[in-house]
Image (tube, rainbow, N blue to C red):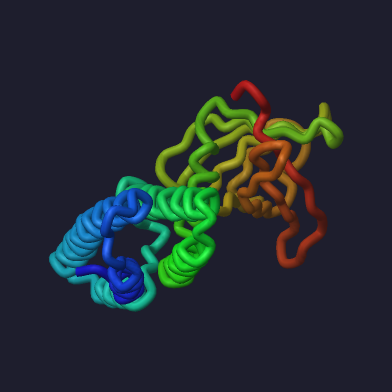
Length: 252
């Protein structure tokens, strides 16, 4: 079953379909809408199966806390179309791809109508596009942000040349990782931490100081800008004592 927000989006698409007649632009848009509806129905079924499997496992383990969590996540999905961050990328990608294809079709229709001096038709299509985005949200951006942490892989190097900071990822297994953190020639640490919800962190107690001291707790948020992928860190134990940024070294 599709979540209510997606049902609303499909309603928008269906309501926006007027008589196709001999309008080639309208025909192409109609085809795109039908393809979108089919893809979203498949996505809805896949999401429902994923929730069912997770709940079955939790119930077999007698884990009431996890069952309650899954039920709450399923309700958010039904009402708002929000998948939990734990959902696999293979489940999230088809929805983002379907939305991207639909938006591309809308943009192409607006362009063709504008070129053909059919401003009323162009405005109507543009209105449908705005309504679609409002109904389902920007899933492409959501996927892009969640995918940033996937760059944090073994052998990648994150650095700040100005500060002399170098973080070399040694190992990653799911949400757990190990890395070597070098601070100039004064400190070398082997850190063990966690990657979750687009954040990376490690605690001072889990640091093995190879040179110098173990330092403090560190927590970073993945992001990107015109210079590439980065992690913005704050450090300190019970309070923020400082900040720094590491960037993914080019070629890694």
